[in-house]
Length: 198
Image (cartoon, rainbow, N blue to C red):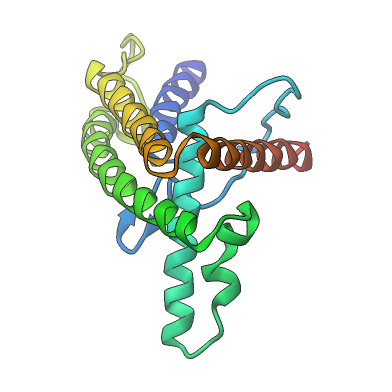
């Protein structure tokens, strides 16, 4: 029975992680605002790339979290230039490129929040069927609802469309430079987080 409970918790955790990886920013879920690997995660092999939609989800979420934090600091009369310009400086982009990044990230995040909220309703409904993650005697492990897979695909497409929008606005040359910088930044921090947790 303990194995069954552990298995159901694993299924629910995996489904939840897909959608609840983000934190709440300004009352809304972002794609995420921290790039950390789960406890016990193995380091990302050096020849493995973080999928584009995940890299952009993490990056956009972090951008918006930093922007919110900078706004809070400004309201408190604190200097916030380093926080406000963190990603612009990190990627070495122009003012215009930084504005485009912020705008696209904000629009994308609004769409992702709506998708995450839809998924949260489905996940909560499934969790309610199994209070405390317990199965009834003889009950098989639940199968994730197909709607979650559809929403995950929709979320992935939303992030990839945002990436394509950056390409269309900035042009291929500038986009390639920024795309490579985002991918390298996310991969380096993901690999570093995995190593620190070993």
